Image (cartoon, helix red, strand yellow):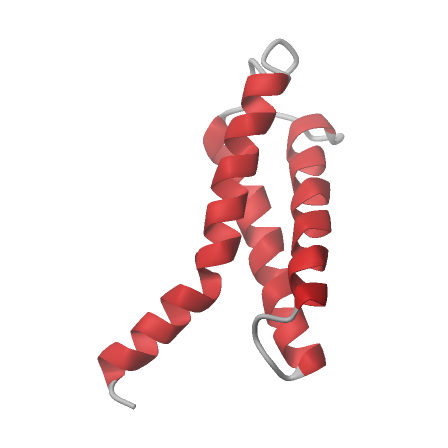
Length: 93
């Protein structure tokens, strides 16, 4: 595998976390727009993508394979917890 192939594998590994994090952040901002006026979309997306990425890496380490449904389910739960923390947690910005 070449350097470019490795980069594509890495980008495709983290693509679900980025897509779900960005989409969930936009929907969160849309649904709770009054409560989240002071919280930026970028803060929400950063937390959601970071937690989702960490869950994907943990799922890969735990199961030994990428793309397991248990990992994706855990990613959705982690995404929700990360969004909640960024949006309504104690250090809300």
